[in-house]
Length: 455
Image 1 (tube, rainbow, N blue to C red):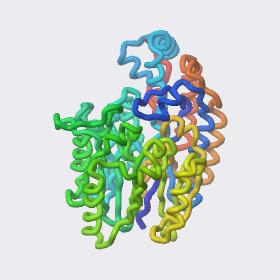
Image 2 (image 1 turned 180 degrees about the vertical axis):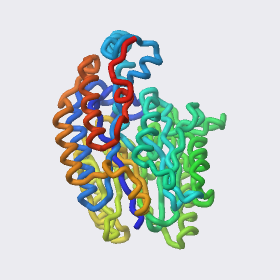
Image 3 (image 1 turned 90 degrees about the horizontal axis):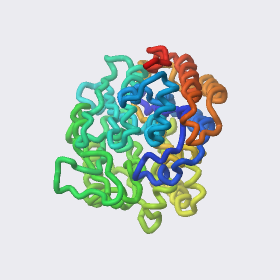
């Protein structure tokens, strides 16, 4: 039986608010405020447990090692690791914050995944996002590629592509700009790639205030690499107005699950034409109508949709084929957005029957809702058996990870704490223990090199 499995990124021990993501209103608003790494990881784990308890297959992805000492070496900093951090703190607090970035917690940015039902060779394809639009995100792809190969090691089932070239024409931000629609999850799907800019088109006028991140060229390249059917692949352009309102990724303004597509009125350029193309292709593929739920801007203005993350929800299918919504508590606390969700559930014309509100405030403050925290991977039974078993969330693993977080994570992290050399050792101790829990071996660079190094 083919099922969708959610792989959530564990929040790292250095979770902090540096305000590094220009164009992400939540990140910018909470810049340089105090964070709570322990609460952040526990909130994420609680959401994962909810999914697992609902019968939805759930797994974890370990966090990146931060600070990124190897990158600092490349930038000319010398001395042992403690001396290096002290030097960076004196030289550039912005660089210090960047190499301590914890943004890998949002696993939807980790990679783009195409299921075996969609690909020419009948294998699951992974392309790690290069994340080159921002320096702190560009530090992630090398480790992401490594960990995905660890979790999905069977080359007879899985294909791992390298990240796209590190050039502005090929900006790739991962599954946050990818939607898969289908009649049933095991069938060949209709893959939607959403982009914000066409760098090779000099006449393309993009957003005026905030940068568009995903490029058309990157999306096309991934579709080719994954061997997707051109007749089952559609490329949609983000609305520039949406980007300028803080929609830095498409998953902030639309989400799909099987035959249901939930989106804002101003999500895409030429929206009527774009949605008609999706509908026509879906009908041609499945001889059935998709379910579109469009929210008007007069009902929920773009800025409010971004603030509450109304569209950054998880819509998942349960064993009885009903759908349920995993939504941040911010939606429930806002009358306009709570009303939207209530109306959807009350409407008998769609399969969404329930909602579960979750507290993930530590993530929301940095601009990530439930959908940001997970990477969706559709797997057959054979493919699921090939996944590294120790990352699959069970009751035992959940409680082990809760104890692990309680033992190793701080409950308060101020911007000045990033200059504390002790934080490096605390983080490495935590990650070393995590790899033992997950049975991943020597995953991190410090485990391979022995950690502290001289000049």
